[in-house]
Image 1 (cartoon, rainbow, N blue to C red):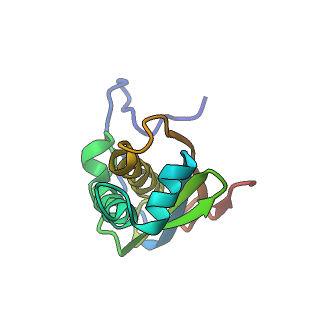
Image 2 (tube, rainbow, N blue to C red):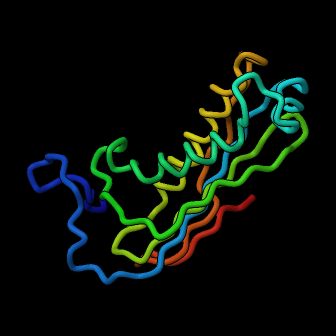
Length: 157
């Protein structure tokens, strides 16, 4: 069995020591979607949701969440992110969120991208729940990562 990086020799949880690693450019892209009624989708598209500009709030929430990933996910390293973007695309009956996180550092930014996408989706739910309490968040996943020792990876879509 491969060595578990987040456990020490005694089986105790530990943060991985990245001190000896070389800083490289790293990028991760994550995506998810939220399905909703046509009424809720139209209100978001038109900026008519009762709580205001849903996408602006979700974008800011996603960026803020990426910056706080180490406070939310045990054993994640606090990272000095170079960039985080959160974008939206309207789909048939749903809204897709795509988050990209990047830095030059010693560890990857997959968790930051996933956290940004998930909190953006949760914010969309919160901002539009007055219109549709039955919204469904799904398909949260890593789409791509670049850089680091393990190299580049892209999901089969």
